[in-house]
Length: 348
Image (cartoon, rainbow, N blue to C red; front, top):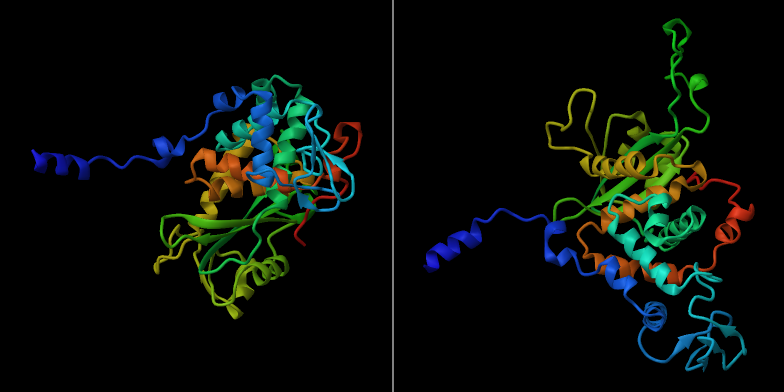
């Protein structure tokens, strides 16, 4: 009997992490069931941790400040500034209950390939404009709080183009060669990704993304120099944008025009797997990436890739902490009243 049980335990098909109970430690239903007081306590603990001490966003004093119970606010003992649990954060001056913002983070967390503002608005019962700004505030927090320390070990890199499609003319005689620069769309951009290979498990450990105008030696060289530690192994494709990396890194190449995998085993599959999720977010959810916020969308896909083996409760807490740590952002105060970002976030 023991032998049969051992055989069954060691010959069951491997279950994907997302199908396991370990991956499901939080549900949107749990968040919607919170009372206003519970939502307040949750956001307070996410921002300042357990205990009575809080930090004044004006002067930075950490103490048991005077709590105004009827207003759910504190008054600083040092500077006398009055602040709430969201003062100074990306959710400052909020008009909806805190529970709605926590629910937005929970829904955003569970959407493993991104979520559109329309769907988020339907799930929360708010207008499209409200859901649009709410989702972008979360993306801005992920961008502001991302870990930009240099990558090490084996690093895969590649670039993919977005916003470059132009519908061809009906008549073949009227069509032009879109490979030529003068015939390409001026808003075309390249999302450049670098991914550090995980030594313990299959896949990548850390992902960094940047937006550049096109794959070129200058931008690729500068970004690699800044965000890849010396002595690392760089894996790239046949594009001439990576030619100069041979002088400074152990660079290994695969020519995708003739093969997916080089004879020595070199691939850049980690970069390709990132673009797989990125394209699914583009085609299946968002449909269109504006250049002004393309860097935020690219970083969102990178964050989802890096946390793909985390329980969703851990991802929820991490995103909530990033939102609480992000200061009130100029680009998302009065967005629909015309206060919009004027320049795109280019790495160059």
